[in-house]
Amino acid sequence: MRDANLLSRRRLLQGSSAILAAGLVGASPALAKAPMSNTQAPYFYRFKVGNAEATVVSDGPLPLGDPTQAFLGLSKEEISRQLDSNFLPLENAVLEQNALIVNTGSHLVLFDTGMGTATDFGPTTGKLLNSVKQAGIDPKDIDAVVMSHAHIDHLGGNVGDDGKSNFPNAQFYIQQSDLEFWTDEKLASGPLKSFLAQAKKNLLPVRDRIVFIKDGQEFLPGITAIAAPGHTVGHTIFNISSAGKSIAYIGDLTHHPVLLMEKPLTEFAYDTDPKQSAQTRVRLLNTLAANKTPVVAYHFAWPGVGHIAKQGDGFRYFPSPMQMAL
Image 1 (cartoon, rainbow, N blue to C red):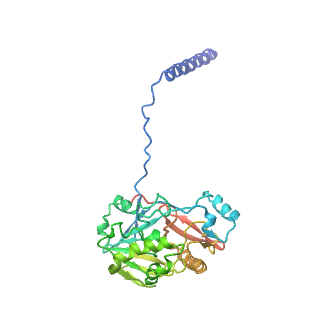
Image 2: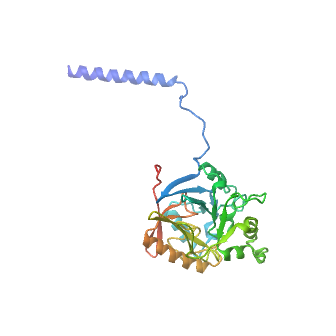
Image 3: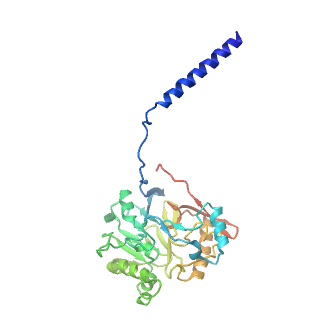
C-alpha cells in the first residue's frame, strides 16, 4: 500500500508538471510588461534641524574627469587604490552639487546656486531652479542667497542670461575679499577666465543687494559665518543652529569624500592657495569631527548629509540615513 501511494504521488506531480509546461508554451506575453521610464525621482531631500526645515536641492552631477588631474600630490596608483577600495570609478571623479535651503521661520535661505546655464563641466548641471520648484519652493520666496565663495559652480544660478536675478526678492551674502578677487580684470586672460566671466555675470547685476559677511558673524538669525580660506581667498562655511540643534554647510572645504579625506593634505587643482586650503581643511574637519557636528557637503554623493569622523591621520565620511518621514 505504501509503494502504491508513492507511485500515485509521483504520477500526480508528473502530470501537474506536464500541464504547467503545456500552459507556458502557449502563454501570452506577461501582462506586467511596461516601457522603461527613463526618469528619476524629484531632486530634493527634506529634513529638520531643530525647529528649522532644511531642504537639499541639486544642481546636478558635475564630472571632473580624470582624478589625477584634479587631486594633486598623490600617485596614480594611490588614487586608484583609494577609489577602488571605496567602489568608485577610476577614470572619472563625479561630484554632486548639493545646495541647501533653510526655512528658519523668519527667513528662507539658499546656500549656493550651482552652475546656472554655464556648461564648463558638461550638460548634467544647471538643474537647481527646477529642483527648487520640485521641492515646492517658489524662487521669489527666497529672501537670502548665501554664497560660500565666488566659483562658477556656486553662484552661476544667481542671475539668468537676461541679466535678471533668479531670486528677485533676495539679498545676497558673500565675503568681500572673494567678490573683489573674482571680479578683478587681471584674471581675464588667465586659465580661470570663464570663472571671472561667470562671477561678473552673477555678482555685478545684484551688486546693490550684496551684503558682506565676516568670520564669526551671525549675519542671519541662527546662521554664523566661519572663514575657511585657501580654496578661494574668502571661502566660507556656515553653522546653522535652531532649538539646540546644528548642522554645518561646508561648501568646498572638501570636494571628495575619499580623495581629500583619507589623506587630507592632498592638494586640489582648483584651489587658489592649495597649501592653505589643505591646512584649513584639516583644522575645520578636526573641529567638526570632535564636535560630531552633522554636515551638508556640497560635492559629496547625493544628498551630502552626514558626519565626519577621524580615521588615522585623516578622516572618514559617514552618510546619514535618509529620513523619509518628517
